[in-house]
Image (cartoon, helix red, strand yellow):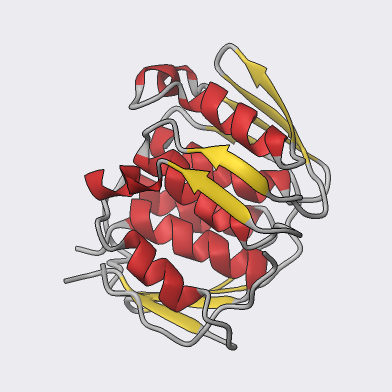
Length: 209
């Protein structure tokens, strides 16, 4: 819990849906650089850059890299209709932001690998978040930090990765059951994550091949 992140480079066209997890880690707990990102990309999940900035997150964006620096985030209203895959990691940031976040138009998350609205509500609330589930979204009241404990991935890669990012702001260790779910989209996730959490000032991740 509460670890600082190390100098490492992520190079995973760069996948913004994966970069979202590392950029969230940066604004929540340290400094992370993601390289190999095409800033002209048409990927819908590129919207993570705007959302982090709108929440007050500090992002430095250059040609093909984004640097996220620990920031005090503020809650906001988010329309998730075009970015459903980002909701789990946005929910982690929102749960650690000042004030209230309302995520709406996210109903199709109920028919993903898991019912992601229920999964993120149940698991983050286990570790001290204040999330209320709506039919098609979430209401999230920010807290200062998470407690820690044991959570479940619901056999869903995005839930597992979102919980891993939450671990950085846990006061006590966080155990994620079903962590192998990440294999579906990001087999090297835990390897990259361990490099990230070794401690240090700045982490780099290369998000392109």
